[in-house]
Image (cartoon, rainbow, N blue to C red):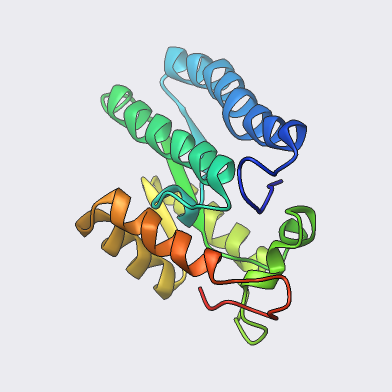
Length: 179
């Protein structure tokens, strides 16, 4: 669920759906299950964030902001429950071979044709293994680990400008933009 394009041009209802799923539903479900798990001092939660949560992403502003919300919520909750036997694992996959690109307003046009998309089954398996190991975070893909490292070094404004320039240079006539 996502909407690629300029914030001022995107379908507002579609972007609200992104917020409803990635923020509201995730918050409500986490609160519901976490409260019960903490009361019995046992349980695991797997949150699906994204590598998009590390960097402000022009043309994917609402999507990346909603994933950043989930990222920071999860990190805060991990700290709050640190003295319990409950774990929350955050899975941060990069681009994977699901229908996201078709549903995000032709966002697939910004991916290189030869870009290897992660296998969703492998991503799910990695998330499950990380969950069962009680890991705090699982980032899928070496390039994604590099993006996270860069995002912790460079200011967010610089990263947003770099991504914005990348996406601004992409016109509908072009086939792809490298990301």
